[in-house]
Length: 338
Ligand code: AHM
Ligand code: MG
Image (cartoon, rainbow, N blue to C red; front, side, top):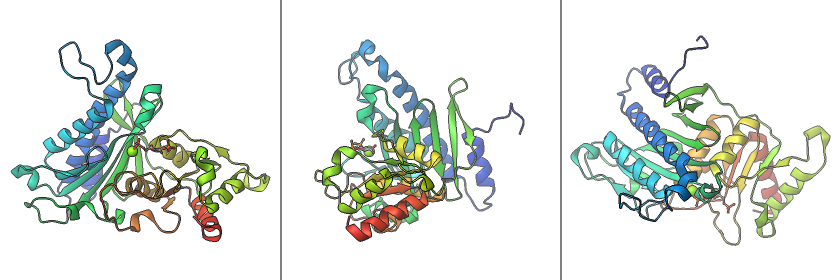
């Protein structure tokens, strides 16, 4: 490839599809729509700083239309993009209490269910800090043509056919996997395309960054406290003390640690006795990405993707990142509890 050649997300998706002669193109079509929805959300995220000039979210704009909060806007846009694509029979979202099924004939023929957190870390919007979209795709369990049911959503992460995230940061990136490794695409705003920027992302086996909300320290399980002490101890051989980095935006914290090497932790706390993060549309897709990059993602005891979900908005403790770091925190949890 010469320096002027770029591979766009859509070209990449189609190239990959051609490696599977039996592929019918429906997943490619679906991923294409995810990319388009992400570009639309990106446009709105970039405008967020202009809210004071253009009017508060929740207020009425000059055309008399209600301004939507950005997370609601992102949710609505993803739902309508995926509905119009026709490959998805039903969607579950952090923003909706129950799943939404598309009750038209075309969508009933859709083979996939789509789960998402349309705008994760949304408390960071007002202060111009990176946020993200997380998504997960499964083949439905119910028969094509029938109405989707909860059974379609309550599948272990190991059944995911694709997953990814969009990071709205200093530049906007889309990272996804279909189980053949992970690749990253950076949005070039001048041409409005996601362009291949990270052909293969591999997570270092070890890292020097730990990411956790230390404000909850006193209520952390003993195993996690002991591991944090270990991270802070001096040991030049293992490059400790590690650095503590926590944005409070899952996608951003995971993305940084994936590239640089590190661990992200959200244990049980007093206010979140089962953990804070949601298994189906936050932890499973991130776990798929992290494992595809060579890392590990667990609840402190077992692989996240092996867990059998029991409800749509189920929460779990979450430890994800560089392989050896996740193994280490598990050792501490085993000995001291967690
Ligand atoms: P949200 O889905 O309500 O945005 O919450 C999820 C976010 C994650 O992005 C982040 O890792 C975590 O919540 C931060 O939580 P805390 O502020 O408790 O540390
Ligand atoms: Mg979230």
